[in-house]
Length: 112
Image 1 (cartoon, rainbow, N blue to C red):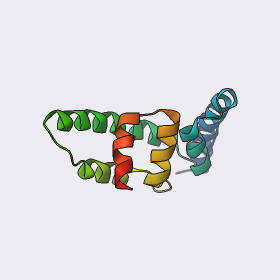
Image 2 (tube, helix red, strand yellow):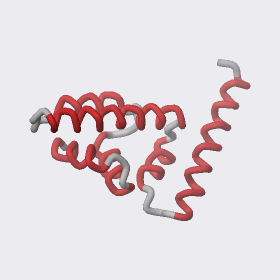
Image 3 (tube, rainbow, N blue to C red):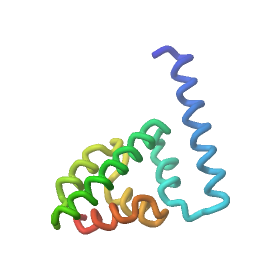
Image 4 (cartoon, one colour):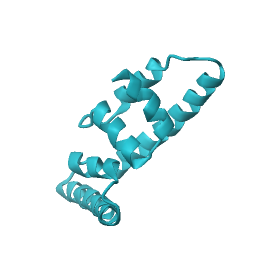
């Protein structure tokens, strides 16, 4: 990656974090956004995480409908897919506080 491409990547990350900061000014309880900024997570990583959460939410509901009561494999899958600087416990707590995928993360909270 050239210096120019690296610089563009950094500017893009800063623009994304600035957008999140502006949202935080209006609502300081957006814990997941705070976590994203603190850990330097990119927009692409967050998008990938949200897609995974959508998939996990669907799987959770399907498994509940089939009578499953044990969801640790889903928990393990989402834990393994997190960007390296994020820990599952902090993600769970931040998402629950912000109201993101609440059903999913309340279920997963049982495993930490």
